[in-house]
Length: 449
Image 1 (cartoon, rainbow, N blue to C red):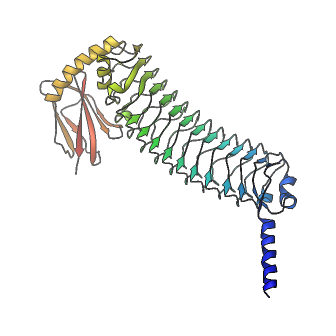
Image 2: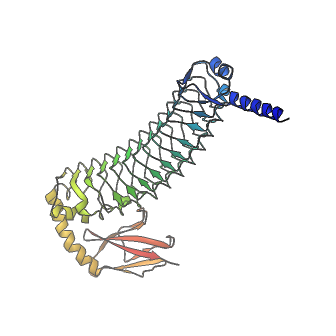
């Protein structure tokens, strides 16, 4: 009886081993549907491929023949499969050793089949898949210990499918996806270990999807996103370890969305955003560690929003070719110009900000005027309910603007009496900006009901 039991156990072990084993350390390339279909016949029990797998064949329509696979030791490349519509057949795959590249699959509409993957150890690249509309199928991914590249997918509408992803150890690049309108799908992402580059996405109107992102340890690049109007979506972002470049976004009106940002570990460069009118979204930015460059923003009228940057953290200052920019006399700039530690280049802006000398002259006037008007302007009651009273004895108020704490301008009154109707405001904290004698004075007030 014991001998019979031993034989049965041995047979079962041999059976399991025959149908569950590692194999193909040199990897394998599938170029035809026939090779996919005959895989389990040609390699019985091969469920753990030690090498790389390449799938590239014009007649491959499905991957059902690979349903036995549970792991791939090195890379997976799915390239140029003109007839492949989904990745069904890879459902058993839970582990891939290094890279996953899915590129140039013209008929691929879904990544269904990859639900078993929970992590990728190096690169995830999804590129040039012309029929792919979202990333459903990657729902099990929680971390990527490397780079994510989502590039040139012509019908990719959003990033749904990446909701489980919480961290990317290196870079995230999202570029040249001409139908991408938002970043929905990245809501779970809290950290990026290196760079976040978002560029050349012609239909991107919103950064919605990045609300959970707390920090980027490398650079932030926002460039050539022609439909982007603000940076809403970065609401929780408070630290960027590298440079920040906001370039060539022709319909970007404001930097609303960056109100939580307090520190930049390198330079800040804002250039060639033709519709940008203000920088108030950066109102809580206190520190940069490099140059500050504001150039070729043709509708920008004021540098208000950069007031709170500690001037000693600015290494060089470049303000030029902002043809509507007349107000540069903000605290950070004025204090920097008192004792510049690096290069200063201010030219070809509007009158008042057309040279360092003009700005210094305006700074001198502001320093006197601000102290004076801070003393005589009275704003009451505070907290307020339905109406805000403004007293400036002996002077005429030119205009009054009210901002919420995301930097959004919500009330503009010009010309004004000494009373401002705030009945439309929800309870909360606001900033009122009063302009008298071309001097802007800001104070906080609370709406309470």
